[in-house]
Each structure stands twice: as structure tokens, then as C-alpha cells.
Image (cartoon, rainbow over all chains, first blue to last red; front, side, top):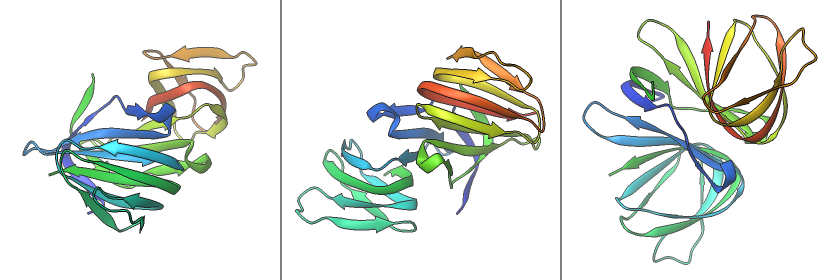
Amino acid sequence: MDKFENVTVVKKANIYFDGKVTSRIVMFPGGEKKTLGIMLPGEYEFGTESKELMEITQGSLDVKLPGSDEWKTITGGESFEVPANSSFSLVVKETTDYCCSYL
Amino acid sequence: MDKFENVTVVKKANIYFDGKVTSRIVMFPGGEKKTLGIMLPGEYEFGTESKELMEITQGSLDVKLPGSDEWKTITGGESFEVPANSSFSLVVKETTDYCCSYL
């Protein structure tokens, strides 16, 4: 799906790491929330509250998921899931455009 | 207005200047289009096709509009207009979150 229809978009962006990571909140009629975000090249650590699905629309990054010592490369069209209440590490190699779903 | 309701959001971001400027297309029921974007600190030159209203939600920049030699500082809550078919220069001093309307 290349666009989200009949949604609500919060005008103010979320800005992290001095603007190197930013996102927009998109709310769906059924109450679901997603964020559409951009990550510039760099190393980041994120924490989750709920389980998350990270879909990579464009770009390239390496992810190390909780409980693993392995780095996995994820590029445009691919995705990864992160359990609730955990943290994950990213090395963003190319500016990455993502869609995060809160499951 | 802090959010846009009943809109369509294109999932894929527009990425310019190696990710230092990125935006999302938001389409309204009446056919109007806006972009919600982020500009990291830096110097940029942009061109317009239609007349544009640039509303700054967060951040700070200096703008030099067409036909002027003056730099004007614009911060969160302020806006500026750019005529159609012209170009304008920006010096972004703080990561800037903007909403561009095509008039």
C-alpha cells in the first residue's frame, strides 16, 4: 500500500537526535497509530513500549534485535519486528524512510 | 490547527539534499495538497511552481525572498509566502519543521 487514506496526521513532527531522526504520527479510523519517519546515517538505540513492526520504505540499515548479537541488514521493501518493552540498536547506512506500526 | 483529519498521506517520503530536507505529501478531500517537512541546519535554494505558503511549526531559519536582498528570520508559529515560478534562499539555523501549502 503506497498511501494511507482517511487518516489523521499530527502537524507537529517528532524530532530526535538533533533532527537526524524525525517522524510524523498518523492515526487511523479504527484507533491504530503508525509513524512515518526518516533516519539519517548514524548509530541509534531505541526502546519499545508495545510490539513494533518497522517497514523500511527506502534506504538501508543494520539492526541488532534484543536477545541477539547478530547484525541484520534491512533495505527498502523489507521489515523487522521488535518485541514490546525492549530495545534495539540500529546502524543507518543510507538515509532511511520507514513506517512504524504499533502492534 | 494541530492536525489534519480525513486526509490521504503518501507513504514514501520526498528526500532532498542527502536527507537534510525531507517531506511527506498530504492530500485533502477537496484536492488540495500540502507537504509536511523537516529541514536540518544548512543553506538551501528552492524553486516554486505554484505560489507557496510556508508555515514554520518548530525551528528557526532566515529566508531571502525573490526580488529582495533582505534576510528575514522566521521562527515557529510564523510563516512566509513565495510567489509562483520563483526561487528563494534559506539558511536553516535550527532543525525546522514546516508545512507547505500550494496556493
